Image 1 (cartoon, rainbow, N blue to C red):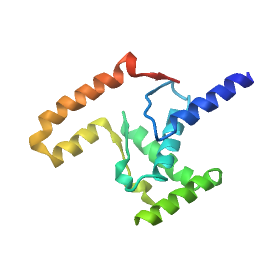
Image 2: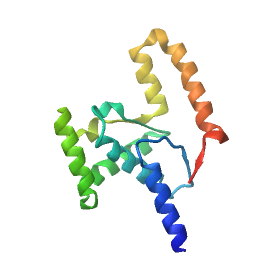
Image 3: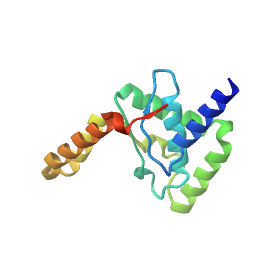
Image 4: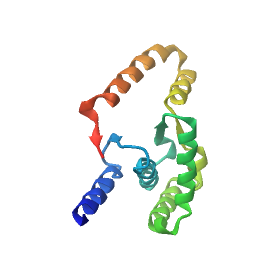
Length: 146
């Protein structure tokens, strides 16, 4: 049992490491949103601009939940060291540490609409890229089991 807990902890640490990319495939209630929140917090500690981070969900409700959890995590004393790192990074790069409200946390449809509004001439090309990304994302070869 202890070995399973250690293994789970190591996998969670690996998945939240911003140096690598992962697709997490796990059932409801397994902690996927918590993993994403921790990954976003770690990214906020190293990015130059918070708009380098885009979190994509399937529903508006999930996006709102993720934003709420990010705000709560920023105020959680268990994440004090990480929040301090984010504060230093924000100060170094001249952005407000209270950036959570303006982070791009959206549905894939919202992301597509945002990009198309910015570059309507390229919208067909973007759609083709988006469809290719979706195929890769959904392929068994790309899945990292959790």
